Image (cartoon, rainbow, N blue to C red; front, side, top):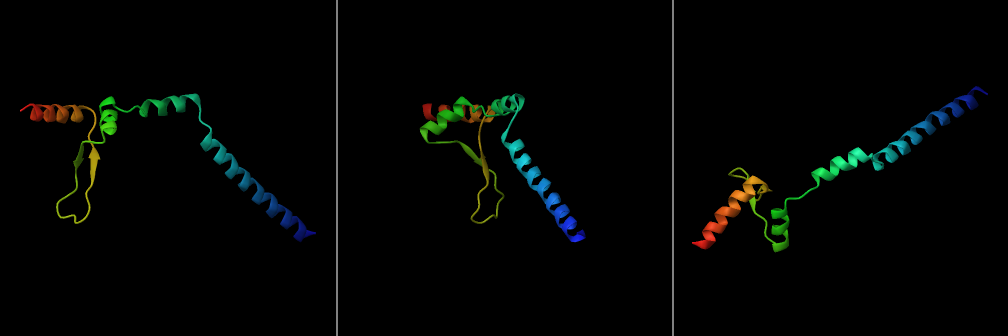
Length: 95
């Protein structure tokens, strides 16, 4: 009888763990209105950047250190920096 009780206890202990994992998965998929609104604000893309993607060209800055063979790190230029370089490029095209 003691062995049976131990086995039942072990089974009961394992069940809540599985339920907790399932509950955690549900929590990850369900989001409150506030969270959705917050994520929506950060998903806005600059119209100038969208225009560049439509044209098939994106201005980027390579920021890798010298001496790194076969690797180039960088970032896409956006915001005020993009406006600055866009004006520079327009001036260069006019001249």
